[in-house]
Image (tube, rainbow, N blue to C red):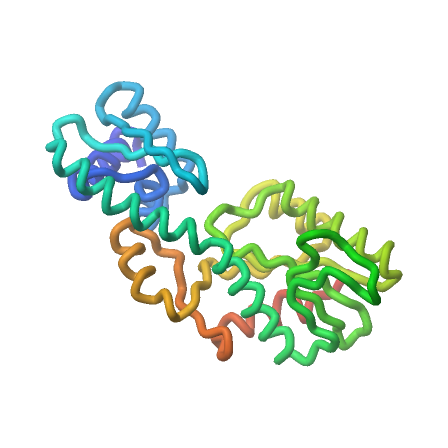
Length: 262
């Protein structure tokens, strides 16, 4: 797609939706046209630099400041009301991120139990009274082949980065040295790209890519509203007591069946 065509798509989105934060625009473009976020972000920056679109910065107590983009000729009342509505949704989601992260860990822990791992623990911080650190291991289990797995769960929108992969490997090495056990690394996440994925493959860390952020059923109504208002395509309502067959199959195929000797 040409640069001008992508610029027009961004302008059309702002015409239709009043005011949008950057990741709403990139999500809407990707959801319809499968254009990567980097290209769309470049288009947004170009349009802003050329004064074709405007921006309002709103402080956030949880994350970086929110940047809402809009067309200069949009009525101020429309911009203000749209920002107020979307900001409320964004802040509520920010308050839920820690709970959603733990929900993902619990869900993967349930699947690991069902796959007949032994000694399964979620958020394991000690082994025989020897500690590992403040956060510990997200999901821990003993495989049928007699080694343990440190399964890191990143149930979040932010893609896993190179530092995350290095942190997983370091945590596994630390646990091995302190606990004197055979331990292998694994990762479950919705998004990972480029050098981070290359590093995981190079380090023999299997990555189960869910392509969805898994959220509890009790928030189903909220996340349907959030997804519609912000163009998000990556939330999936899940039941921690009854994981979906597709998610269980993913963990089985990618993590349980992974051959660390290859």
